[in-house]
Length: 136
Image (cartoon, rainbow, N blue to C red; front, side, top):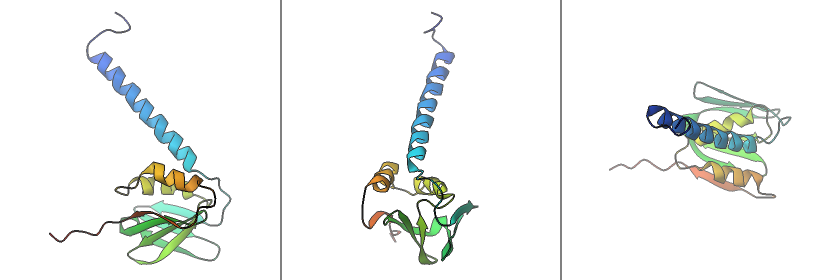
């Protein structure tokens, strides 16, 4: 066979199909994370720094210093080592960039974030907390 021939091309093709499936799943999760724009404020992520500029407040934090992620009534609450928590509406312009931030936090499952985001009338939910470093 032409279709199911052996050799390295078959393995390469299988790898391409697997990568395509992974990208499709990641794309669907990213689409579900978007809650629409038009909300208050603007989120920017540049070189490991997350900035939120809102109409009444805002903040800047180093992504590596995030200690907890919570969600309260369609507002992300990011606690960090550098100061007061930063509260970001899920509909803020550029808030979809938080998907990548959350995806890189160890132990935070994307599905848990999506479930919390889509839960109607959910109160304050802590979705992730940084584990303290062990001394020994």
